[in-house]
Image (cartoon, rainbow, N blue to C red; front, side, top):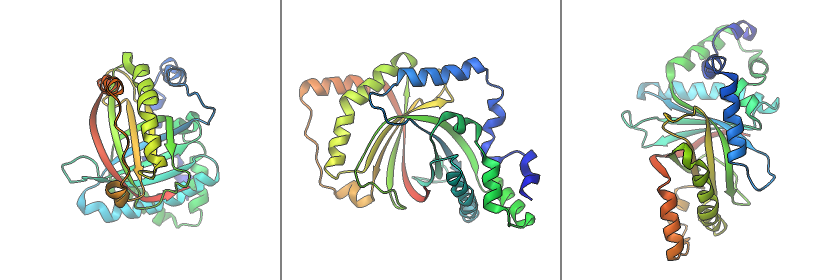
Length: 283
């Protein structure tokens, strides 16, 4: 049953069709620039991930939840076969019909090649649903397309992150996702400012129990002067109580630090912020 679907367009991976149209030189430049311009001082493995933003109509919300439950089995099989490191489903706030997207998924990869090619995706589908009747499989496949629109997709590399020692992502976790646009000439200065000026402040807040996680990531694809988002930062909290009632305060920076921070903030345009609530997770 599943093998019959291989010649059809995989609804969640339509970027593969477009990928073949990119020039090899252009794609190589993406990886070279990302690896060299944002090289990290530490030796930790690089992390890559694909972020997808979903528009879901109010009348399709129940169907969309069924769809994600269907796909969760495939994500679990992909973790088992080594294609992905994990998958997260978030609901987005404000999330109104006329306020952008309602859901976000994040798929984690250990390397950029698997991120861009999909790895052994069909083997995972076969493993997850080899016993599912073909009629039911096709019904869920069709519901995938009808229940949501993938409005935006970013292929990204994590440049740096700090997390609490006991961080354990679980449904209900709150994440503030900041979308930045940085001009190409300012990329390295912006990343250096995040590392030198802001990273330690995030680490101090995490160590004091004020939040669980901070990360800085760059967009690998799409890229170019016309893209709206080039970098994303994320700040995660256990729950809303930690957001509002942690009681953690960070010392105010001195005048010199404040001046440097203000200059750093002028390097990027913070054009959008989403508040994401973790709904489901696969590891």
